[in-house]
Image (cartoon, rainbow, N blue to C red):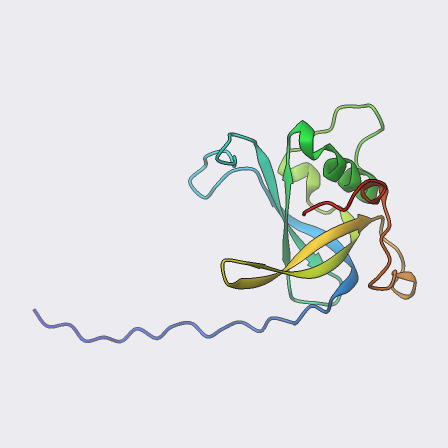
Length: 151
C-alpha cells in the first residue's frame, strides 16, 4: 500500500508579546479536571485549579494555578483579596464556574523552566484603572507583608 504525505502543519497563531509589569486580567477559563476528566492534583495529591487569565488589550493568555492546601494560604488569600471573592472567615467555593469572569491586576515576570520561557503572574492586587497601574518595581498586596514567595 502506498501513501502520499499531504499534511500541512497549522500556522502559528499570532500571539502578542506581553510586556513585563502590571496588567489587568480577566479569568477566561478555569479547570479543576484534566482533559480525561480526572481531578487536577499534584504528585503529592494536592488538588489545584488552573486559570487562564487574559490581560486587557493583549492576545496573550497567562496560566495561573491555585493549589488548595494550607501552606499556600497566603497565595489563596491574595487571590481572594485581589478578586473580591468570598468574605473574610467564610468558606470559598473553588468551583471553576465560580472563578470564571473574575478580574484582578497582576504583575507579570518572565519565568524559565526546563529550557522554556513563559509569562508568570507573580503579584496580585484589585483591578485599577489603566493609568494608575503600579510601575514594575511596586509590590502591593497582602502576600508581600512576609518574605518574597517563590511563585
